[in-house]
Image (cartoon, rainbow, N blue to C red; front, side, top):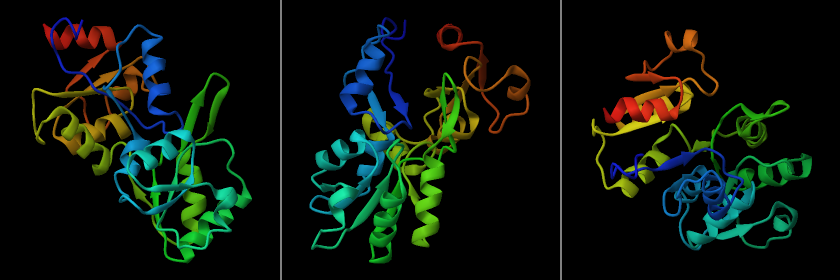
Length: 234
């Protein structure tokens, strides 16, 4: 419907574990053309490092891919302890291989001067079997052990907002644009960061009762994405 109306669409996710192609394919499996229209928090985190920097990747394949695409060197925590050159940054992203060794290696790099970058600080990660610890939990562990605060790259923070604006060729405050999502704390606050409208869908984690008192207050509320699109286009 949006493509037929020639509306520009961008899919922005805080999930950093997947490679860009894997993220695109998940949408394509739902019948959605996604090539060139996906931004991940891994890409936002990688935007905070420079070409040639040595980056300890305490995260999934999506972060390693994004770091290498940036022209930086992606180091695995399993062999970083033997690295002879200093580590410039540690990027932490959601992954299920996090353990004490990874925590220790990451903290040691930070103690030696590396900066800490987090793809996102979502406290939990939803699964069909319930909530798992999210990247916010992993970030808190490394930040505590490293005695630093992490620079956060994903929704709703400035680094991913800058990528959105670059991709769309827009400036902040474009009121013809809208961020649609199910979570005010990330999607809604990203809309605030961008200066766009916020459309809240009730097909995710926010109920209709919660929507009435959510912050930020949405400009539009719909039961699902399809109805939100119809509402926006009419």
